[in-house]
Image (cartoon, rainbow, N blue to C red):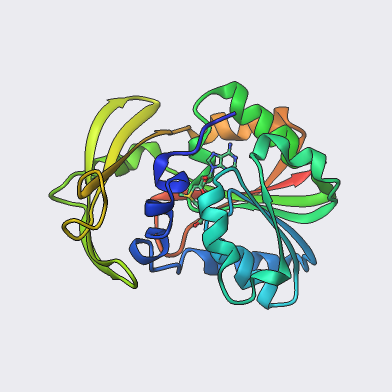
Amino acid sequence: MTTPDPIFVDPRLARLYDAFDDDRGDLDLYVGLAERFGARTVLDVGCGTGVLALLLAGRGLSVTGVDPAAASLEVARAKPGAGAVTWVEGAAEAVAGLGLAADLATMTGNVAQVFGTDVEWAQALAAVREALRHGGRLVFETRVPARQAWLGWTRERRSARRDIPGVGPVEMWSDLLEVALPLVTFQQSYRFPPGMLPDGDVVTSVSTLRFRERDEIEASLSAAGFEVDEVLDAPDRPGLEWVFVARRI
Ligand SMILES: C[S@@+](CC[C@H](N)C(=O)[O-])C[C@H]1O[C@@H](n2cnc3c(N)ncnc32)[C@H](O)[C@@H]1O
């Protein structure tokens, strides 16, 4: 199984996720597609801090949010309305065992890029397929490699500061560590208020993401028993991402 990055599993960092990723206009497309498909049961794979799961549950859908990072799920479970969602600590590769027959499975926030090897990706797709009913949809996004998003993952181009309730001001910045396509490795650093943490003020998290080409993804979906119905553009990031809409066959 892919091990989640510290940013999702370290409780000190998991509680910062929503503050630094505070524009969730990316989720409108997913909410719209759930509505368009008339989905009643949704499996949100790699649900993280549960933003989409809660949005959908708030609209009356039956939602299961799955993520291997306990600290992120803890953040999700503490949110208003969290009782309406079934939260499961687990990896995408294990969702077949949940006994669902979901209308829709989602992977938002580029979850698809965390699967570093073809084997892990194929296992995730196979498991998600098993968790869908026949004709159920899988919708996920992934960054377009040619747009080289990683060029922006530097201290100069990606840094921010947020006031975190109960913590104080926290600064974040990124450093690009290695581009060895199709893998890109970068580090995110968070500086906490002085003396707040016992072992230094800066906590870091290193992530490696896989950038897959469109034809690779289409082939992997087909091999896993999906038909690609559409490949959409992400309206909030035009030209930067592909949003795959695949149907279980
Ligand atoms: C960038 S976050 C996106 C979270 C959420 N979907 C969102 O849109 O905010 C990526 C998520 O993928 C999760 N993840 C990592 N490995 C995973 C795996 N093998 N199966 C499912 N999720 C995984 C991480 O724990 C993390 O919550």
